[in-house]
Length: 237
Image 1 (cartoon, rainbow, N blue to C red):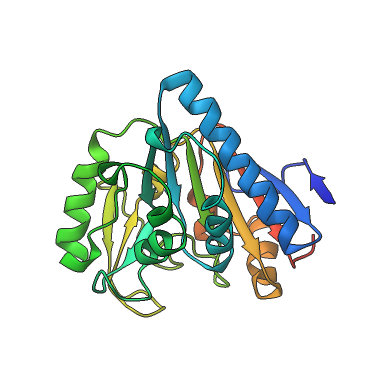
Image 2 (cartoon, rainbow, N blue to C red):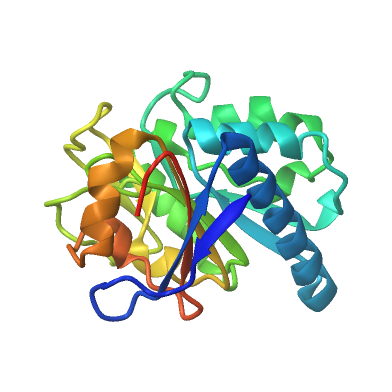
């Protein structure tokens, strides 16, 4: 059973948020799965392609496992990532590897339509390369994001300079290892028709409280015209 609070919480100007609280992990997973597939169908029907930006983490992983067995028009999917760690491509901590082994290797999305962040090149060169990849990409159809206990999303961390100089930018001195990362900039993440935050676990309660009380955590930097939907399980509001 889904309980939805449609009222916007106090926020810094520009971000519109819709908060949805779920009673089980399966409920949030199934609702997200259905929303992804519906967004894909809508995008392909209207524009002939569906562009999705993936998040890392355990909740997205469980949703990707469901997508592996879903029926979809995979030939018209284009897949991107919101961030990744500067580690070898076969490192288990890479978001791209997780998405591939859990889902992407098992469906028929054309290889040239899966766009991993080349974080193995290092944060500077890898960001430059991914910015070139994104340069010709129109408005994303759907962006998936998570929320860290400190309020970070993608690799946009508290108390670090906001960098919108390109669609993908290097991250230095991340508070969580590894220190070097690449993130899609908040401006480019905001250039999306739909954004869903997946927030699970009691450890996120403080970040959710800050967000809803108007504290300028990094998650509030994501400001698409249509607003964001925040899917929650394990927190209260």
